[in-house]
Image (cartoon, rainbow, N blue to C red; front, side, top):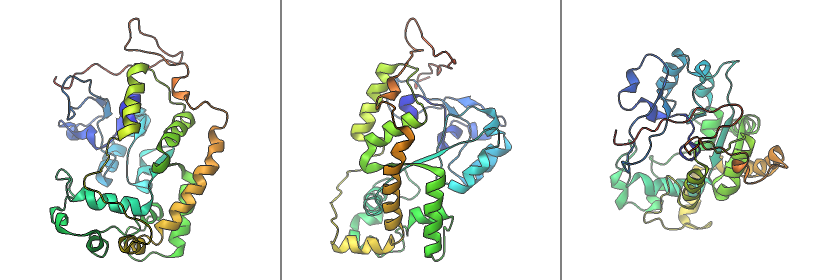
Length: 293
């Protein structure tokens, strides 16, 4: 999303290229993996994906600098400290069925040698072995949304997670990713302002393949299979939570009622075109910093 809409993002990528030592908050253009002849994306020089990074960003006055348009973080409660009464945010997340997520995680961490969670020994394991090991995550969604990262979970934690997601989140579903993206774009009034033709092509690639798709040797698991039942035990709170999120997804359609599905194209402008065009409220065009620079 950030790449296609060319938003200024706050992620762990902002502190690469030595920017973790910066003392003032700023927009930076770190080098990215991939094709050299591409423009780099803008990031704020903070790391919103760790607790320490969030604390650093707060001390640097991240929120009131008003530089980031999109903040990415797994920390629901800690991220709240990034914002102030004069610089608020709104949470949104794309949720995945807990069993599908667990299966994908199993196949991912056994090949993802670039991740700290990489477990090459899992290449010799079955999914059933993984489901009964101490490596598998337990009710990850409920724990994140109730702030109960360890210890036993109760129905009270599930209720708290449901209340947090109801009152704080615009929810999306991985199983309905096109509808999700269209809703997010409408809700946040996201329109193209850099190069609409290229941005739409980027979006189509994202929708068709995904930026983090993981299909490597993945075997389907059906409800009722032994592996499914074992994984369900590890997600006994996440499963009803996900059902609730599916209900919320249907209800939240009212938030964008009446707006066109292609809202992203409404009143689009092109700051990279010749001649350049800009929206009436103004727009700061991303710098043309090549990846080989």
